[in-house]
Image (cartoon, rainbow, N blue to C red; front, side, top):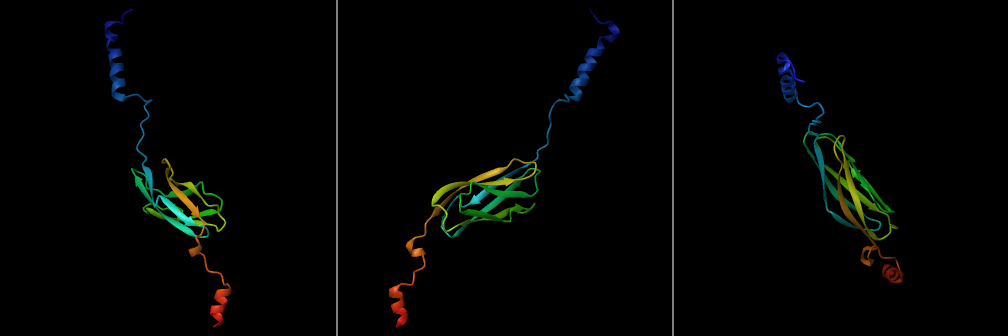
Length: 154
């Protein structure tokens, strides 16, 4: 079956229109940006009953320029954390993570994950090895004993 001569141009016109307009099913997305995180140091040793700090730096790329929230995953028993600030405001890039180790926290090495989250971007993570150690005899306060009492008596 052939088309009448007056309608033979219709398929060519349809093809030209499809090429010119493109396919409506294409997913065209604009870049949303991204975040990255850097930490210093990447490994930290903290004595039981003491604190340690980690500098956290956030980098934003592309069109992302919003707040970034920070969290820690994998903190062992006896270890608490605090970010200052916990949410890095748009335009700011730094936070300080303070890890507080209880006097009775188990001695061990644990890998913590520091997570940076922003709305509309993929989370960024970094790991840090936290080693909890017992105090050494030189780091403990001397107990008042007999020899100390004798020295005080003179």
